[in-house]
Image 1 (cartoon, helix red, strand yellow):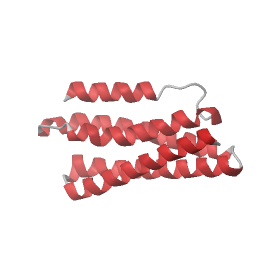
Image 2 (cartoon, helix red, strand yellow; image 1 turned 90 degrees about the vertical axis):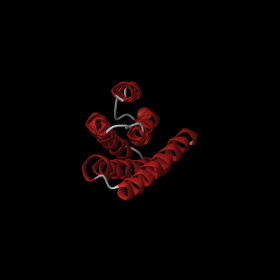
Image 3 (cartoon, rainbow, N blue to C red; image 1 turned 45 degrees about the vertical axis):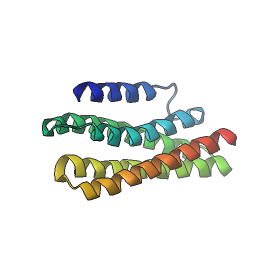
Image 4 (cartoon, rainbow, N blue to C red; image 1 turned 180 degrees about the horizontal axis):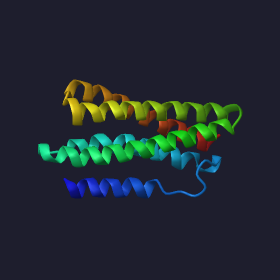
Amino acid sequence: MLLLVTVLAGGYLYLSQGGGPGLASDFVSVDQRVAAGAQAIPVAAEKIQRFDEVHTWDVFALATLARMGQDRDLLEKIAKTQSGSSRQIADQAATAAQQAVSAGLLYRSAVAVTYNLSDADNAKAAMLSAAATLDQEAQAWQKR
């Protein structure tokens, strides 16, 4: 499990590298990092096999959520610099990023604190929905 979390964290950190954060030219990479984080958290949780692995996953989830929060802030900054359809796309992506972070926090709590599978399933669905919206906004941004 530790190896898997290390690989997932390394992959997420690799995706999180980019030049000139906050620039409109980085919108797609920032957007995709948030979507990747929203997808990586439940994937890693599904690999938990023993109770003692929950803590390792929790550390990964918290680090991923922190980076997703930073990227959400970047999307909000990008949105403020845009106008017209670009502003609308960026605003929608920032909203989806906020939804992904909020759902991720609920998911983390359900898996690592309360062990409530129903809450975890609902939060996972919300995270994946937000990731799908982020993917759509990235495609829209590229087509504008």
